[in-house]
Amino acid sequence: MMMKFDPNQLNALIRARRSTFVKQFIEGQKIPDETIWQILENANRAPNHGQTEPWRFTVFSGAGLQKLADFQAQLYKDETGENFKVDKYQNLLTVPLKCSHIISIGMKKSESLIPEIEEVEAVACAVQNIYLSIAAYELGGYWTTGGITYFESAKEFFGLGVMDRLLGFFYLGYIAIQSPLSRRLPINEKVTWVN
Image (cartoon, rainbow, N blue to C red; front, side, top):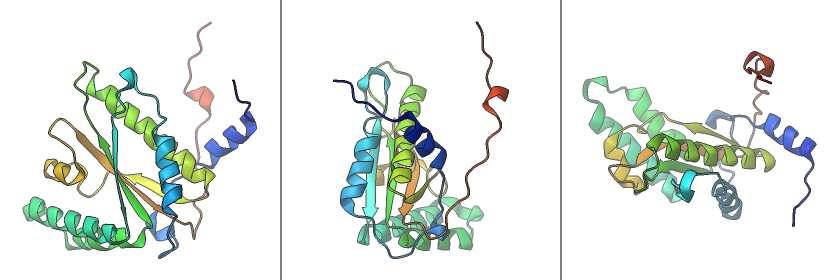
């Protein structure tokens, strides 16, 4: 049975999607775990070639935020050598503690012949579902690829293997300061229509 939806509500939801950063969160206010589970279930409905479902998430909350902070700060210190920056180290150690939850975003490479880029694209679709879900729940969050995202040595901590990819982190919290609506150039400047 086909369900009926209001396209105007969908259009409004998509336009309401935005990134909200940690400095805009209400510090100390926790999102219910049931809400996080629903957001992840929505992410799980993303399209993916061959039904490989390549997304892998690790959720950090409560004391888990400190575990993530300690791990990433130490790994950054161990890996950067002469490029070490004290302020970046301090941010890796303290910023996670200002969030309600942080979700690591991983891509598990299937053994199929599906190209890796298509697996990455599927994970990006899952993240877009997270973005739309938090907009519907009036929560704040953003996807970051900073910190230790591209350190090969980080993968094991998140349950990822050699062929897998760590694609970043999604920081979540309640909104204290709303981000403005993002600007976009007109769509007709980005479309070629062939009849």
